[in-house]
Image 1 (cartoon, rainbow, N blue to C red):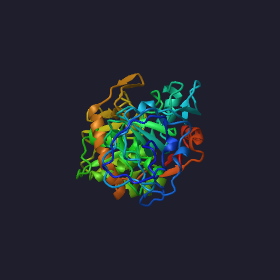
Image 2 (image 1 turned 60 degrees about the vertical axis):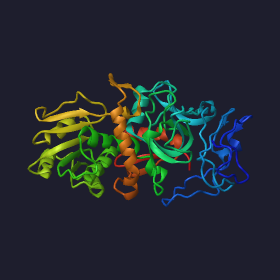
Image 3 (image 1 turned 90 degrees about the horizontal axis):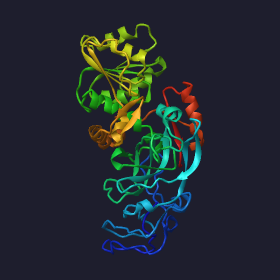
Image 4 (image 1 turned 30 degrees about the horizontal axis):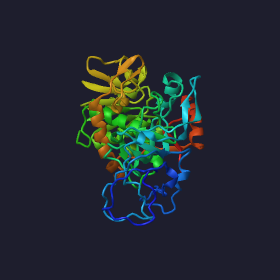
Length: 437
């Protein structure tokens, strides 16, 4: 990690706070960092952490960079990692290479050596420990990514460096979130390092592994955006109304069930019968087989005389929107995913259908399916609200991670996962890849 040169002797907190390093300052001069062990128990500092020189490929360095000490009481010694003490204003001078999954000319991707992206003064550099796969990852590669773009969205890892204006994250923090991978130059999570803004990350609880934390990013944020922001449901709350989650066994659906239950709703989920027990454990009150010819009637019966008021279609194909809107007996609102504003509505007089697309929180406009999506400060504010609450919800078990399946091979295993997902072999689980043990 980037930090001030290794200190052999204790230094009091009132020591000089800044100096210009007169020579090339390399990561090799730094002490081993306190890494987080994935034991499922409270994370403690590791005395035998991997040396910093082995954590990077290539010369990650700062040239003539000043360091500001943050007046921390106590002393610093060889047993105290100095990773939380410095900001580096000239962080753009960093250099180095990493391994990343990169889009290629043939609408595919390959693991290649690439530059470590330099964070701006408002960004953080994250050493990626685990990533999770979403359908959007392979779809970006197949249709949207320019050759050379880094691929991948969901991640969990450790803050390796911070820009000089960053106040909310420190080097060594365990964080997770998502980026808009595959769309913009230098942005993607399927890599050894990534850059992002601290406000769109959440702190990983000490008892949560990187593998579990990586599953929350896109899916949990999407579910919260749909339920809380688009449908206006207070979370937590005492809703006492019926919420339909069509596609309850999807990644988004699993989080939507838990958040809707946290809101006090009666949760009705559609899924294959082999998923019912699991979904009821997440909070679903009633599960209905989406293949059942009487699925609409059974959903209506489960909702009772007041009917379904709110719905989230996690599949968002024409037939699912038609079926989901048919489940409403009175006025209501259905949220769809994937940016699908023109999908058919079987009940247009009573049900409003509104799409949502979670990338709007990331502060950068984008185009998808010939539709322009501006960055939304309000969407960003709501996501930041979620990320403030989420660590406690995870720690308390109120919002559990997706069921995971670890795919061997790290970055090299991701293309196999893409093929599994494209062929429909991934059901009721999240594919996760370990980038750093």
